[in-house]
Image (cartoon, rainbow, N blue to C red; front, side, top):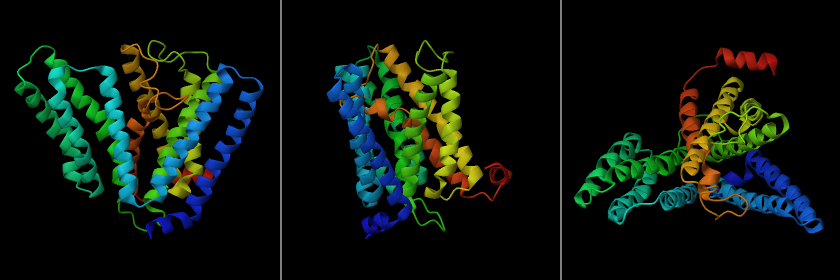
Length: 327
């Protein structure tokens, strides 16, 4: 029944249709370019666009299928992200038990999210696992480089599991007078996160001269950053029909997602720079690894959840009056 209910929602159906239509057009164009003038650029554009099609299919499944299946898919992404980060950062043989404990935390965290066990959700990894993992490491009796492992394993859990698992809270988030449910919320979050990446890249290429953090990400510019954040805010305003947000709240949400997306991108870029890596993996053709695509989502997911939880409790504000006046 929930599958049928999500499919017949016109807002979700039209939005997904627009996504697949746009990707299909781009895929056709880039495939033609690749066949006409095969070179590194045209082949990469084709591979990246084809990968976006697969990503869009995954997003549609999360949005349309029953929440239990969608939750499992998000949890699997966390598993892949943790495994990917663990593989590139490297651990001692003595860390295996602690790593197994970290993997075991993933289903527990998502179980807590699915059942809205809020106190345990917010305490399990930041307190429980941060306490458990050092003692597991100590029990192994190997102290060489143990401090690095004590810091790194919980930190990776925070990045790839705790932060991403905020998406799981959206599946059963109680919101009155909002018919689209988790489908609209998750679609909105993923769309804005992806659009922010695209806009920051596009504005940076068009107008970017001044580098913002060249030591970490040489391609990031002030024009790309500011243009991306501002444009994402207006897209958030236009797409607010997927959410219970008012106009002013949607603008603030979009700008906040733009800032958080940039910060998440820089965060993972700094780790890769430290490890002298271009990508975290090559599992996604043209894109790299799972964390190369989920880097922005690491911070946009918790920002979206907490702002949404705050906004749905708030009355209409001066921001909404200004948005009506100017937009």
